[in-house]
Length: 295
Image (cartoon, rainbow, N blue to C red):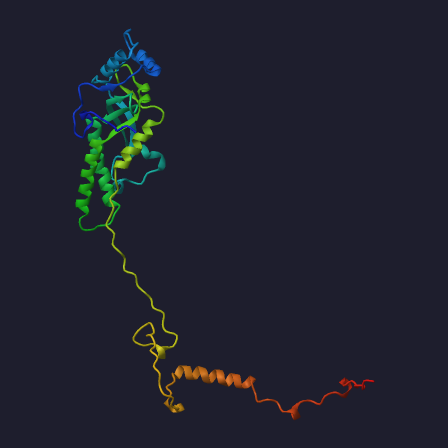
């Protein structure tokens, strides 16, 4: 895709040029209709040079100011705004009309027209960002060291961005051209301008502070086995010669001994010594069938 090449008048803080550069290589039927519509006198518009000259003269006029968009913005800080009904939004908001002028028309490579904001529109947006946007950003965030400095840097970045802002759209946007060189954007291009301008108003992002998390440790199941460490230490095995160990030499946890005694007493109730044959009931004789010898 061809690289965008803009004139020096499109740079940040650059004044408006006395003429607009128009680059075209052929006659476009739609442009011919537009130029004939806005022409107050009958003039020849049959070839490329005639259309190029007339379009450049029209767009270079001091009155050739385009209306790009209209922004509805709050006119006071939210913390100072009284509670109002939803229908009274116009009493707490202002309508800011964003205006611009054409700095470049490219009908050969990229088929685009470039608009740069007027000084009045830039000043109005800068005042809103300083007085309303930054104040709301500071009121909606908590306090931290360096908050005021970060807000100042945020405003400086916006000043640079709004002065560098150049809206580039399809060259068919010139269909909204009027007789004095002014005009307005059609076919939803104003929404693109609104999205670009609101995207330049960055929020105030506070620094990240990791929160301390309280760890709740589960108490051990057997308190007598809880040592100095939570995890059991690895066992080391060593070959030892066999030696009988007396029962008194074995250290048994009292809690484990109580559990062991409880289970042994319960088991003794269900598991007795083997039953003796004499204690079994006598077998019934009628159950026994005679066994006949085989022939």
